[in-house]
Image (tube, rainbow, N blue to C red; front, side, top):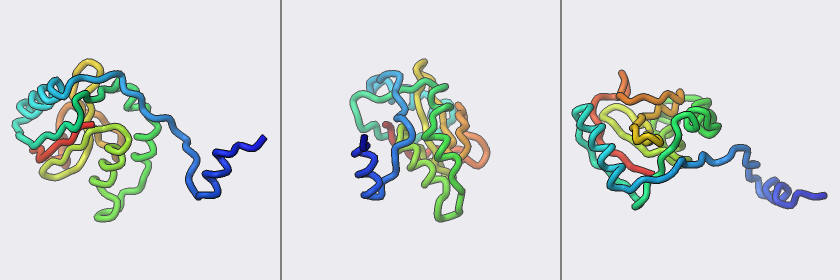
Length: 146
């Protein structure tokens, strides 16, 4: 039997989807997310412009994020200065599931997990952290939620 969807994708030159979407654990209100983010900003001594586009914001299980094949694919890409660098990695993760963070030195991502804990995500190596580290900078410029 012919798999028509696969044939049409091949004829159009579109890749076969090989990963499932990361499923959120649930949602919290944008007000709750704003409070969690504001507390994180206070903790690191930074201020930032925050944009939360939806009334309900997605939260994820930390372990699901770590094991997500989409994040693994992003981390496996080659770093090329000025061509495919931190903002490109962060944009890819933002497109799939994570919020976007720009610091004074770096672009990366963030999630809120199912316990309400804030995590920075370094999409270049899949590392989740509750603090900014080293070259990631020391002040957040802006954040865009998902």
